[in-house]
Length: 206
Image 1 (cartoon, rainbow, N blue to C red):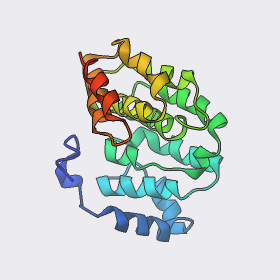
Image 2 (spheres, rainbow, N blue to C red; image 1 turned 180 degrees about the vertical axis):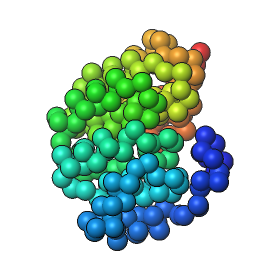
Image 3 (cartoon, helix red, strand yellow; image 1 turned 90 degrees about the vertical axis):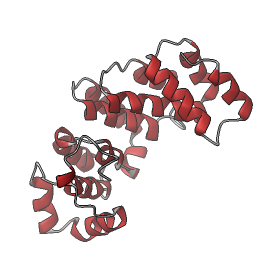
Image 4 (cartoon, helix red, strand yellow; image 1 turned 120 degrees about the vertical axis):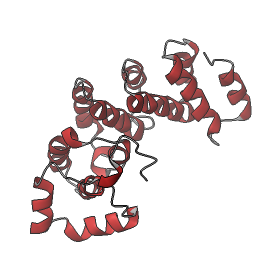
């Protein structure tokens, strides 16, 4: 795990596997010990942050989940904790979620931006998709590696779900060379994109 999150001190990684973290989250959530844990920020260990996110995932009320996230987002310091988020409440409240995403983009902190991109990718590329979703991701400018990787992942996913509407953003070649080429690489690794489209995408590398 330490090799996958090189920006985290390996001494702060306990190595608890995800299924055990999820099981612990279920046993703690809605208990006095769980409430104390959620309020005890910042945590020391990487695994504690992952547990915190898994506990947030269990909350079914949209407003409560947002409140928990607002308290926790300033302390997220790695992609694994950030990307561990999943929410039925967010999926069912996209109209209320979009203004929050726009707010998170305004913060000059990499994991606010990565989290906002993650939410766009998870909840806005299918049923409630429109062109502005792509524009939001396209306008993200960052020097942070983990933000740019998320932009690339977003557009690669968008190519699998909204190919015709996403392609002009790739054809414009206005993404940074790193993001452009990573997007194409990830898209070409996807089984959801036909071979002929992959061949064309490869011609758009910078």
